[in-house]
Length: 282
Image (cartoon, rainbow, N blue to C red; front, side, top):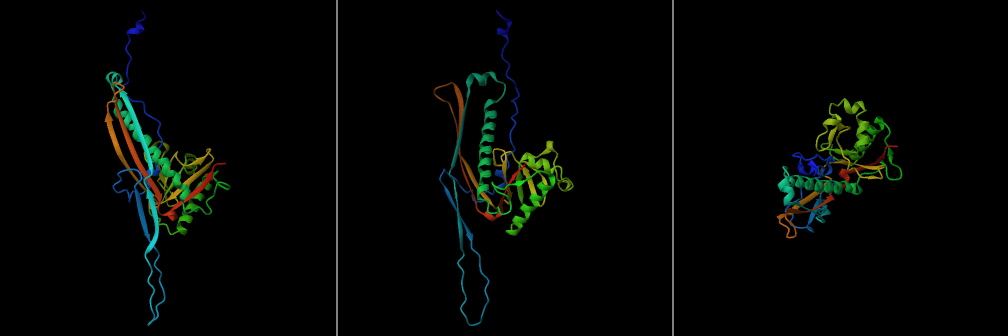
């Protein structure tokens, strides 16, 4: 009999670290209307006050009263995602790691990544796109200068819509960030981050009046046409609730199991506070 039959399997005490993406978009939406979400299908009605006119006054004439009713936006909680996993009793007994805690961390990350991609998809609702490229004629980013100039164009487009300068963000793909690192106007500002010190929320620095974030969830078509989103947190409202989290013992196996249900939704409530620039790197 081989001695190998007597060598026990060693369960490593350290869980292998995953190469996860930075999750950005979920942190750039406001949660002003989250409220008390109980189940999928909840609807939040968001009202805006209409413009109030200023008119000439003539003594002895009637004045005109404006209605304050403005546009109404609907935020519908129409997304439902779940996770479910189990850990066999034998595995749990042999392992000197907490497999359930590790699995919960993975489930949490995958949920947040799903939400991140969902919010990134709202680039189609951006109200500011004129002069910022499209699928037919994208802006070609082939140098550090062009990358910086495209941010200046984004700034101007938001300025034209009276979007507050405070708190502006832009989310760029890694190739764009690479060009920015070569531009002295980005580096000289003293806010550029070394590649190994990018913060966990994807923040990489400032330029042209934007807080710049890097994400691998930037929507793109076959890795060519990238939708670079910019604006303020006033643009997108997001609401979510983990409505169910249950621990159980499945009848068909000797194991512990956990399942969870997340319901969520988002809406662009200020389209003019959101700009989308279409770029490629050819």
